[in-house]
Amino acid sequence: MRILRPARRVRASHSVKATRTLLANDGALARFPGAVALVNPSGAVICTNAAGARIEAVLGGGTQRLAAAVAEAITTGDDCTVTLVLPAAEGGDQLQLTLSILPLAKGEAALVMGHSAPIGAASIGAVASARRRYKDLLSLTGDFAWETNAAGVFTFVSEDGGFGWPAEAMVGRRAAEFLAELSAGVDPFLARVPVSGIPLAFRRADGGSAPTSVAAMPVLGTDSAWLGARGVAREDTGEGPALRVGELVHFVDDEFERAAMPRQATG
Image (cartoon, rainbow, N blue to C red; front, side):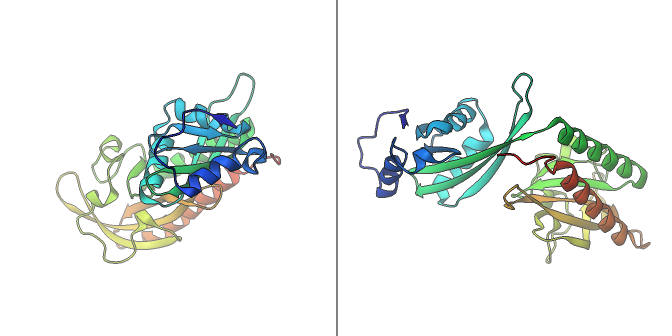
């Protein structure tokens, strides 16, 4: 076991002490083939197994998303999963790192466990091709496409934005901010199951309101953890766009799933 900081003088909880023991040279977690690290609320690594240096490197490299997720898990006591794509080493493939964050004692520490798999050039090219086809479809249909995170914040919107709003004015803001009326029913921007034909009133940039039909699919991580939603929307002109946007979002989701599928088994 590698100890990366002195033990705190205050007495640690039993779960934290037990984890340190399991990460010791003869402990069960020390023999775990994946990366394992014990992390404190500030994002500092307390100790790791041999493979855990990768987690230490990611946290030390200023990856704010992982550090924030660790801090939130420790504060709330709720576990979560984070998936990161790491740059390729010279001559190698990009690496997808999936990390499970398990708070051991609320306010004290979390156990971070991860596994990685290479993302081959063929898979990257397939995803890029799927994105191009998606953009081509959007340019032909005029649909507004988007993705949100688990907080309902836009992380992506189509290049031209939507309803008079430029894309840069929407990304980073909650989808609810752009609704003229909050929906009392299903919220497609937090969809956990596929939905289609959801009627919403979007707030136009000029102050008007646009009746809209929305379809959405949940976005899932490699371990099926819910990460947010992606979908498309189109102003409802009474000509039945709900079916079309629903078909489009299903098509897009299938394309991305096929494109991201590994071409060979990875360890």
